[in-house]
Length: 172
Image (cartoon, rainbow, N blue to C red):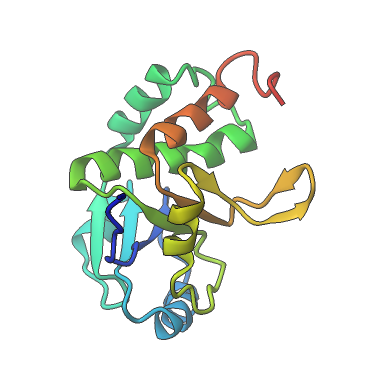
């Protein structure tokens, strides 16, 4: 019989770059109100944000730009900083992967800061029963929306990076 995980998955946000937008606290507070039993985690490459604790998040984790560069090269994302929007946005998944390894997080929801999540009660448990992998909402049969992601397999998270290795997106 498979052991059922009864700990709710955390909500993971990633902010790479400059200052957090002024509206972030309101967006997060609304999500927290609907998901008050879940931990909220922020991952950032901005040391000022990482050092300056904010009451909105339960924990803030720093991943250096140097480490992100290393991860990008390991994932064959060699042209990551040459202006390609999709490659740059995929860096968040590398940052999440790094922190999940470091903090031993095996399952999580990832939301973009400009998204509000209503009550996610039991959704992670239902998806765990369905299988392992990455789960995203769809707005079409052939298109998922990465603004909300559930992951219960870190190896599948790394497999996602293969889509960004040269020749980019040729597998789709």
